[in-house]
View 1 (tube, rainbow, N blue to C red):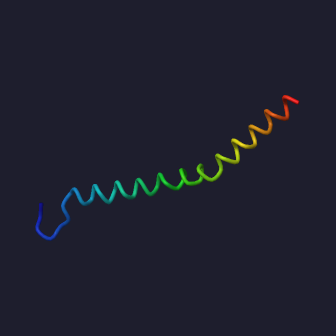
View 2: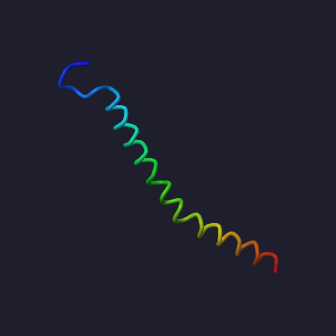
View 3: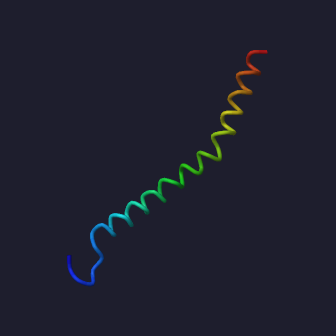
Length: 50
């Protein structure tokens, strides 16, 4: 470690935070669309059975 420089673990923490933020974006989109998709599929199956 060099004085005045950030320790390697700090860089690792920052990379992990960035990776988590990046993974959250598509997950948030799925949380929004998945309930609608499930409802649509349920209606389709119900309508098909009539």
